[in-house]
Figure 1 (cartoon, helix red, strand yellow):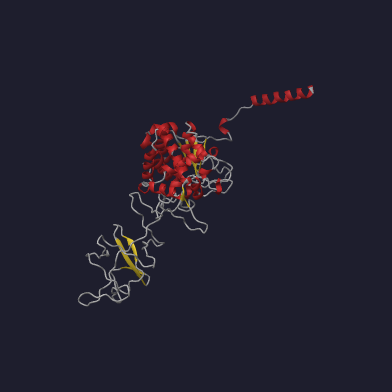
Figure 2 (cartoon, helix red, strand yellow):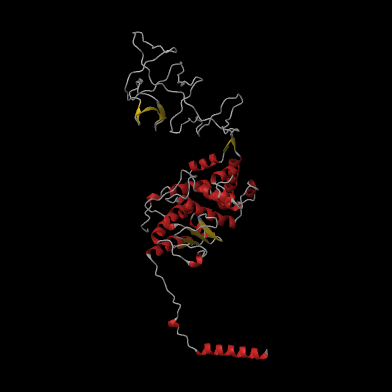
Length: 452
């Protein structure tokens, strides 16, 4: 054993001496250090991201900043330029407009990494973005951007997100707010009351199978929000501040579960006297009922006859032409349809040989008024009285019986979230939403090819 130790010691000394005796040629190393010159884009990023916000914006592929488990490709520079301008206008400048530059400089993640291709998780779901410990956010699919066909969906929140062109609101703006929310809540925790609203309802292991529509019924703003309470909170925040009031209202309406009987027929609300309850708009007006072709639906009596509007004196109200005259009916006027013009005036039309015509266009025989027995009505001079277009009584949307538990949960969470951001960070999420949605609507006015 001593012999072996001596040999090992001698060998170590020999190696050490050999290292000391050899001179290293530092100019002939196999490892070469390269210094990359700053491009125009690099200088722009320095001025618009690094200096004001202390954010490193990486559009080049940085191996140590990406997950080597996935096969991804770098982002191309043209689309990276566009994305840097878009994120600055819609995301960075939105917070700066509301909170000032120091807010992001103190609280924002430090690295934005762009990747050209998508990244899929183990369940074949495309990853929107990743955030590493509040330090770095990675955005994917940059090379899929169509700079000549930019799209921001601000009207239909339940539309499929996989369709092309990419919805910038969902894939990027929403993602930035979501991940930033995580950073803020890691720095200052939100009320534990939020966790209790949907306790026992989270889909920790099977959230991937929860559609956005199902999630809304269960009190979550999206399928991803149903995974666990931290994602629930971040999804609620990012969805709210990137949704127009109209889009948000659609989500809330979808959260209502319409009740049906055993045969699948919708159950409608009744007042205390057993009368139908009707829907009303924001101004308290009844909401007209439309058919599948967006035509108004006339009301009918027990015999199936259309009911007609009358004035306070019990006289029929007629549809008038541009000169204020009543419009006579002709035999060509079959299957008359009714809609409202852009100015709110009633418009009547008919279809003949596949084309739509206003009822002022006529053809065929003039139609005359008849009494209840079907006899033609004559005036005092003995002339048959023409039939004129009258204004129908229209149907209105009845209010269905609904389960409001999902809606109630969402609204309760929103109240907790709103209070947290206002009292903890000084962020008025309603003002932020106005700024974000306005800036998102302005993207087509941006010059995405010129660095300014």
